[in-house]
Length: 214
Image (cartoon, rainbow, N blue to C red; front, side, top):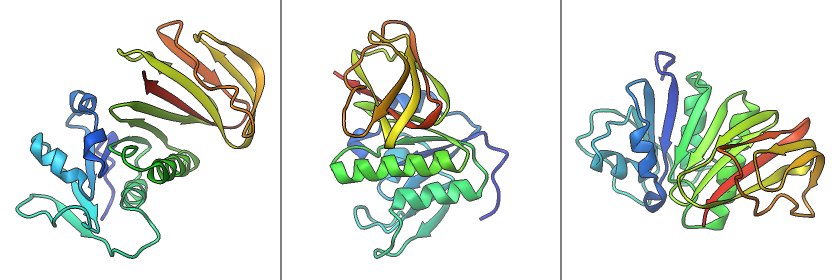
């Protein structure tokens, strides 16, 4: 399948079409490599986006016909989700910047699986953002600046794993300085932006940041 380093970023459309954000349509450029995971290709084609690759077992959508791109047919019984396979494919092509959309709606277990996939991307040395209709997800083990969206929202910060230490949060209504967040007390839930951006730092551990539309 080769490398795709002529492209700057990969955008992956997931199968939860109702959650695919139209915001993504406004940021796609010719330098983006487009992968559609299973049913996500229906949204792309409807909006006149030509994928570079379509992958999936096509258990929730028909096999795509008359499309001018590579199609990877996956077995129905497999360890990887269609999204996870798409991410691994992009990782093998050398991408270091990921945007995922259409990956949080429908089922809580699938959303949790998406968070695990984000952690996999982070551990591989790449950056990832989830942009869906009702939520944006970020993950970091260092520092991250998150722009305030155009809609009213809650901002929540949780550790991935047992704890995250040395956590600083600035630009929010409730700030933190060198705090410890643990997985048995949701200290970071339901914060708000107080500035145009929130900056999050962590010295040890990994943080998941959720920006959830009110």
